[in-house]
Length: 142
Image 1 (cartoon, rainbow, N blue to C red):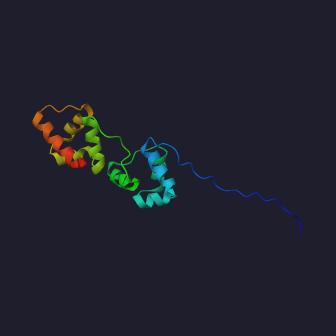
Image 2 (tube, one colour; image 1 turned 30 degrees about the vertical axis):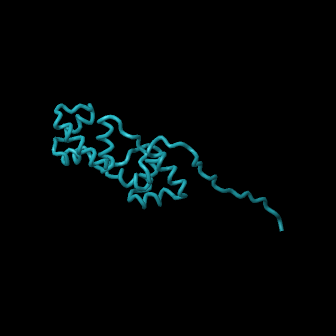
Image 3 (cartoon, one colour; image 1 turned 135 degrees about the horizontal axis):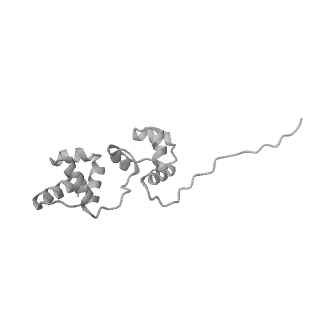
């Protein structure tokens, strides 16, 4: 009986000791640490496996409504601590999964007004700024 040389191949283990810088990298690192497939992560988050792939490769950003589920799944908030008004406004929207329209509706202001505040960081009236600050504190749970 002739002998045949057999070469066994295996997948290399994925590298998990990198410092994630983007949301996609945070997602990928957590998935690899938990030893899950993209399909399993997609099922847990209620999104498609292609979305997980594109997020991990930083090709897309998730819909605003998906951020709360992503942060819960990660077990921590991967975003830097907000310092400016604009960062606080974006952080509040991310935490709640709100679009600009939804956030403006809850604060009872026009969406273009919210958008302008988030873009410039300037709120003309002190009373309005105080109301916005209270709103942001409640939304961020501070």
